[in-house]
Amino acid sequence: MADTIAPTNPADASAPRQADVRTEEMLVNMGPQHPSTHGVLRVVLRTDGEMVLESVPHIGYLHRCAEKIGENVAPYQYVPYTDRMDYLAGMNNNQAFALAVEKLTGLEVPERAQYIRVMFAELNRIASHLVAIGTYGLDMGAFTPFLYCFREREMLLDLFESACGARLTYSYITVGGVTDDLPDNFVDVCSEFLDYFEPKVDDYNNLLSYNHIFVKRTGGVGVISAEDAIRFGLTGPVLRGSGVKFDLRKAKPYEIYDRFNFDVPVGLPGGTGEIPRGVVVGDCWSRYYVRVKEMIESVKIIRQCLRDIPAADEKEGVCHKKCKTVKLPDDEVYLEIENPRGQLGFYVKGDGSAIPARVKARGPSFCNLCVLEYAGKNCLLADIPAIIGSMDVVMGEVDR
Amino acid sequence: MSFEEICQILKSQFGDAIEETAVDSCRPYVVVSNDKWTEVATFLRNDQRMAFDFVQCISAIDLLADDKLACVYDLAAMSPVSATEDMTYARELAVRVTTDRNNPQIASVAHLWAAADWHEREAYDLMGIDFPGHPNLERILCPDDWVGHPLRKDYAHPLEYHGIPGTTEHELKSPRH
Image 1 (cartoon, rainbow over the protein chains, first blue to last red):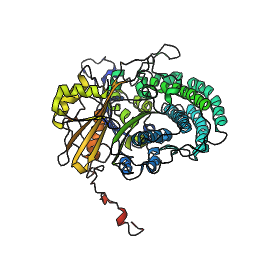
Image 2 (image 1 turned 90 degrees about the vertical axis):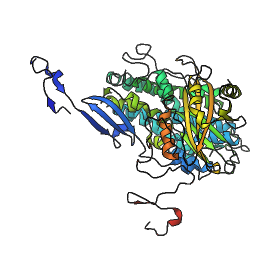
Image 3 (image 1 turned 30 degrees about the vertical axis):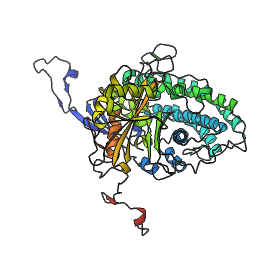
Image 4 (image 1 turned 90 degrees about the horizontal axis):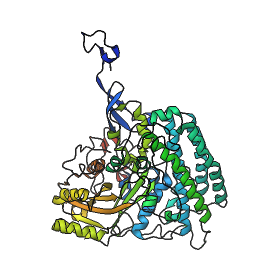
């Protein structure tokens, strides 16, 4: 990097040596195997000393052409593939695809199944945000919060396992409903978990959110304005961190979200309320903190679900009877839901047969990652992991 | 503003360039003529009544029966940006632009919506649609030296890539394959 150290003005020998350092631009290849790229993301950085002048993301290392598979199997058979896109939020992915197919075919979902879906979508949101928060701390050099987060996530995975038998790739929410009814004691076990979990959020805040070093590393770093966030098509906590109060669960309620009371957290300027000084709306800290707050809102929604869920109806069941035989009309649909990472959309086009003519996934990580080229410019090398981590990308869904 | 009202404005502004309005579709869409797409897109982005500032998705589709490829643009207009009030989509609109299958070209809209950049690269990579005016139209998901565009209906799977053998189910003869 600094191969020659020569005074810029040789006549002035008294000039401080610091200013004399002349550096050469260097291309640094970060990833695809790098612990803080959260998977196989490769970023090529053009650096000048510690400064990053340009960062260009290269993706596709996990590409499996999942959309092509969608053109060869029936919708209910495609549900397991959606799990493997955003593998940290399998329930939400299942739900997005199921809702798109249901809208296209007009299948109706039993009310109890809708409650179960919302409940698991929100539980999965908490589980996904726990990973996001924990690994973000890890990126910033804080190991302990990661263990705390994974301790709680383990309990959530136990809940998922009790309902569907899987801990990561659930395929629980399927076209027409859910695959199985809840286990007998689920309501009690789940409420118990919520009572245990809610106070833990204060622990995360004390351990990580308000930690001085963490705030210094993330506050005011990678600032994205509200206009830019919309221009780049950012969604989810990344959009809301920029002070845009937009959440599809409120803006265009799908499923039964219009029945619940909850708030939509947004990024707030530093110095107001509990927000530490040095934080700017739209920076890495704001995006991180939106996730912390969203977990509390999810707890609120799940509590309301548990209170209002209708009793099991043997005759109706929890899944539409035609879920495996339904034919897709010669028409198309595009439907988005609020995934933990942002808006996950599915475009499904039918041609009259039982197999779709085209399935396209609009992945929130894919769309959020495109802003890296813009946000990862003229910053310090150490800011790059902070910016990538605050986007919370899952490469399985970026590459599909 | 309803879909019909948007169509009305577009028709009065562009006449025949609005080729079809699929009102009865599960999610209504308009079909815009390929050669007028830049003008229509600029109007959709900049006109006060439209102001579609958000690209939800761009989906490339293969209409093999009509010997055409197409792009479906799902656009939305955000209601005024607010940090205190719950926002909604003020308007949503789906636009379909078709192109010839043998020389597929659709004008790029990356200069209007920054979000379109990667979506168009993806459509180029997987469906082989050229987007004249795109700042950096390179493959995004497949390797740079990949041959063909996998999402086309008539795509043939490669049987070899850098020494890695590929097989189709019909050719799977021995367990050594």
